[in-house]
Length: 76
Image (cartoon, rainbow, N blue to C red):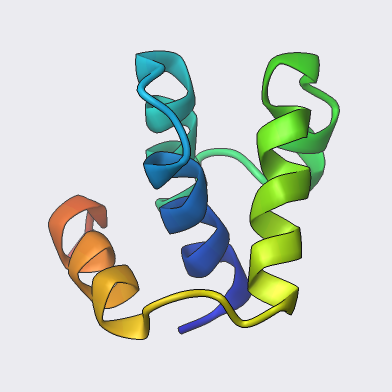
């Protein structure tokens, strides 16, 4: 899995906040960039944690794959 998909998954799973879950899905689908999210103070804390977990390789790739299958919007 790529970095953005993994970070999207970690963001989605890190909180019960509907706003952050929506931003994670937007990131997954390319509607918003990591750079844009890092400027948002309400989500920056969660991004730092997600990036740290990703660097430590503390992520189940099967769960990330299922997350992407469920929430990724494919345009044909």
